[in-house]
Image (cartoon, rainbow, N blue to C red; front, side, top):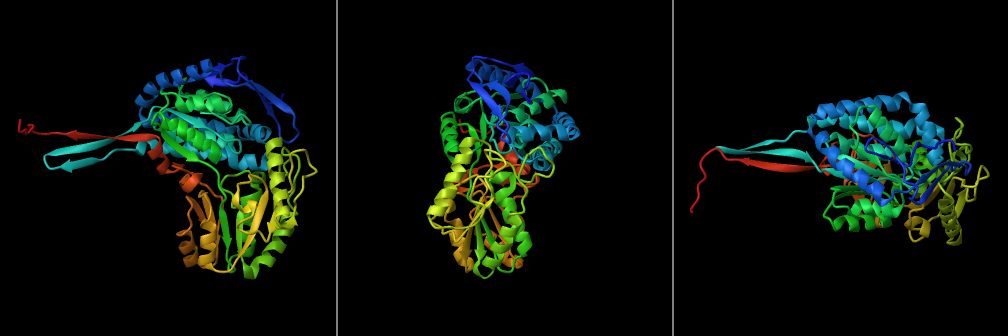
Length: 483
């Protein structure tokens, strides 16, 4: 077992185990090898984590923001110093190619920690003159926040949630996905090494019941979830019973619109990144690629050529560009969508079968002549399946792009920047790009509208979701009263 941690959970600054918890087996998607055996958190583990966080949060919030920032910056230095080791762990945990995890996963997490470490000391209130009297505002932490992560970017998500939470004086209890539990444990260990007080960041493992326990515990002030729409609905309902703060980053079926004046190579590259990176397991992927009629066949011909050149294989090899799906269940789900596309009359351009590299590989797949009513154009697949749809006019494609319950992301490729801004302004999505796709720098807010969620991660906007504003009125003279 190549990645066995010292224990299943990290609570109050140390490893914790409770063998009474439900077994949690971690496999390497590249081969199916068991790499770790853990246990889900029992009620005792959950209580210890929350109780410790409640106590630790008081002293943590009392520190000057710059002192909290220094600890986070030490964690950033450790992450960057151990980049190769952490990338290898992320690849074992997720099956993503090592060339991806070296560039996108832990490095993005380190960027978030660095950004919020520097931002926290700048967060101040305002004074409000009221004649002789005045008022002022104070931005306060919420208390103990629960983070519930997804399996596609487990370590990045742990950092994206903990960075704004911890920098502003909250404590956090984090539950990673049961399929990718290892990175969050490493982050907790790094935080302690960096000097973070015990109990400020805790990790508990488990399945749905553990997330439900965190969402309903009265000591938890806020829940931040990254996951599917059905999971989001359940967590939102549970959190609402306690009037908790909630942010949700859920699924998507995002449009990527390519006009006939676009740079073809760039648009194709973006479409491939927005469908095949991480084997298509990215919530913001532009899986509905709308291509204007005049360039559709040229687009498809070059897309097929470039897609068939993708190098699939062992995720731990440097040359591998494309890895397996996360699990057998996900493999079966993706293959069922491919079968439905064939049955409903979509034209298979390339791929469309299981890969030969291992049991969880699916070929990068492109379907053309997809219509808006087809299943693959309506439902989130979360796999390497691109749907190419034809359009003729700007107004037509805007209406069709918006005809979905989802609203996470959208992109436009065009040589006419006025049109780019005009179209983006009408698309119902929270995170959008013009002549780019899926770039998510920490300086830019990331989030959704409609059923894809609400709230924002990253940027200064995230601070709004981990703090609350207190108003203070200061009377400078005697109180006038008719009584």
